[in-house]
Length: 440
Ligand code: B12
Image 1 (cartoon, rainbow, N blue to C red):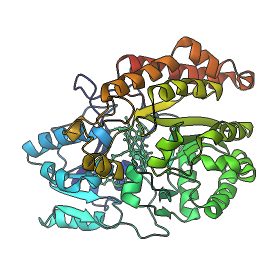
Image 2 (tube, rainbow, N blue to C red; image 1 turned 120 degrees about the vertical axis):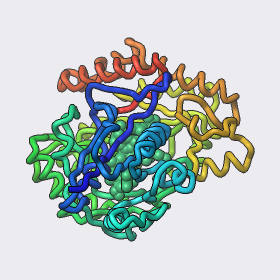
Image 3 (cartoon, rainbow, N blue to C red; image 1 turned 90 degrees about the horizontal axis):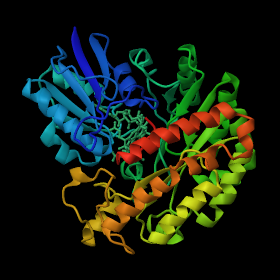
């Protein structure tokens, strides 16, 4: 029997050691999905490096490695090690996809974007000894289909109390910094409802009471979302997802979301500067409306989680500092921030390169811990300092209490907010070590 080893690498920390965790809360779907697409005469093993060591002496014939953001540096090192041992290495995932030519230097073949339509061809080519350097066949606009993910290969690992499910890929918005826009270019493709429900049923059958709908923007197609919510409600589960903030205008939709079991929505708010948003091609988002929309979403019992970036064209040192008040006033339990980073392949990267505003040439140093472009209203070093100061200012014991305990909802669900406090303390610990906190 032939064997494939599918690896989700862990990015390096400041000491160039792969980050390790006791528990991985957010698991991706790519590995269980690729496993489900393997022909029956193949054995499949999945390694989540954050939790377990890579068996470099494996008897696998083929090695599949995912690439995500700056984690790609680790992907390359793992590939080198396997190639040294004579193994054939395939890259896939976002980073390899948007830097495909560069990626082919470090592996035997790259899958650009969706793997569904090329995976069987790639495996057949491998077996016949005719592997091509690049495989690319994007899913057509409209709908796409996937098999049931092989969660059985990961549920015994130390993962959180929910599993990932996907309804759609891509997003109708084209924000200039976004890797999703770069791959899907404003397209939103979705699975038939029956398939999404089939996958959620599997999650439930495995004993999980929660799932993460890891779509990029569940508010991309309101007719589809409406129908999906009706079906999800019947399953009686809790779930989390992400979408654009404009959903906060839609009381009817928010009510349906809450009724269907949606407990948390995460929003890429990016910046409180309208100018920054306009320059990000995100002028449709109005920061003056953010507080009202957040409060409206919270009113329906849905927790709001935020993702923001610092270093946009209109951001100033003052506006970055003021973000602290915004987060505290809106009682955001677990806020996350990133330094706006020109990821190769994105419009923002092209703009910064053309304007000669990149301050670092080595794209492998773009790990989000330091500014790599010259912002308009500050120096790159000032931006880096302001970023970490903002994080530090919000992850003090005082602020954690203000955002999680001193709020009306605390008495209704103390367990939940105490859990958020623990997550905050964990983030605080990561921030002290200058690791960009993420929801592992
Ligand atoms: C869940 C998730 C996470 C989770 C779990 C990640 C994990 N270790 O599995 C957590 C929270 C831990 C995480 C962390 C990070 N993430 Co993340 N994450 C996601 C998210 C929301 C969903 C991923 C997913 O499962 N998608 C569903 C699957 C089915 O789609 P897919 O991954 O694209 O896989 C398909 C193809 O790409 C391909 N494919 C994927 N891998 C492989 C491998 C092989 C061998 C082959 C052949 C094909 C293949 O086949 C799949 C089926 O078609 C995506 C957003 C998104 N739209 O995907 C961001 C995303 C992938 N993450 C991103 C980033 C930047 C990060 C971080 C660097 C963030 C940070 N600042 O720390 C870290 C890096 C972690 C790491 N391990 O390296 C970016 C990547 C951008 C880029 N240019 O690479 C994305 C696109 C978010 C964004 N909008 O920018 N992430």
